[in-house]
Image (cartoon, rainbow, N blue to C red; front, side):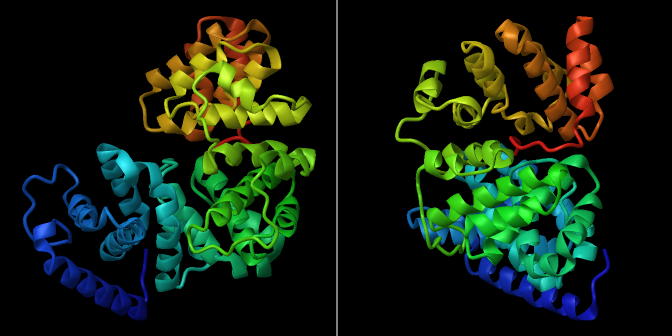
Amino acid sequence: MGSSRGLRAVIAAFVLGAVGVAAGSAGAGGGFGGPTFGYGPHVREARAFRFCANFERRPARYRSCLSDQALSLVVQTRNPARELPRIDRYVHSVGGFLNNNCHILMHPVGRRYARIAHLTLGRLRNFLPRTNDPGCSAGFSHGLIMYLGPQIVRLGPQGATAACRRAATRYQRYSCVHGLGHAYMRLFNETVEPAVGACAALGRADAADCAQGAFHDYWIAVAGLDQTRRPAQVTTSPRKLCGGQHGQFVRACWFRAFLERPPKRTPVSARDVLALCRGLRGLQREACVTGATLIVSPDPFDQVGVCKRLRGDDAAACVRGVRVPSIALSPLRDQVRLVKECAGVDHKAQHACYSWLGKALNVIRNGGFADRGCDGLSYPKTRAACAEGARSYDGALETFS
């Protein structure tokens, strides 16, 4: 992507500053120069992030250091579209706090980089990370879109959705629409009603996915994270917040509730999931079961194992909480193996299972799962259910991240 002379000057100054900081802390293992031995295959990323180990006992400083180092990496490489996937690979290799929190740590990185680059909606596509990874890359993308909030409002809903539809992949388009929800919440001072109303104006195909971004930002603001402003009217009860939403947004509301504000006891079994949703009925119960399933385990195969112990609508709702994006970078055979797990789900929920997983996997493979993946199933009915879901991958996702 091309850079203006002014942007090049800012980048040069930023990189010199980053190198200066790292040089003064070489013994701590940070920075962009110096030795490379012992850093593994991601030398630049390892040196940058390991520098922050100096601050592990000071949580706020540690978080800000990780974001600062990520920004230094992106600025120094001058190509966020390619650098973010490298950061993802490094972060997944080390796991721990950085892996678990990279998405939100990248929100301010995206905002700050967008400011440095004088980003516009028309140039957004060039800056979006070239990956379907839901961690660091998706968080960076959402930060870019938060920065673009004023431009998004000026363009109106049609202009905003048109900008997102220029994204290179279906997952990136979803992530862009989700980011619009974050942007609307920031613009409306973390007030749910006008933000969700702005999402509704995007049209049925995008409204719920935008709303999920809005609810995501709401819970971030309630926790006082990511430079948010605490909402004027706060409820920490998902039952109250989601119970007051239009049916179109109920699933999106519950999907983020337990993930961003976990219950005192994390559910690990089907019984635990049902206990969290006791007393709810209809769509509210289904959406609650989906949200509870999302936090049962980071492993989608473990999650399906819990779904197998539920019945009927509960089992179908459970499958919607399976973390399909976590295997976005896995081989096709592993993705097909996940769909095959539907054979063990309650018979009444099997069609919903094959259909939903077919849809979600088709999103992360950008339309490439409908044939290559669904055709790997053994029986005509299961292949048909999988393909039916896969064909609908352009529609609203609601429960996806």
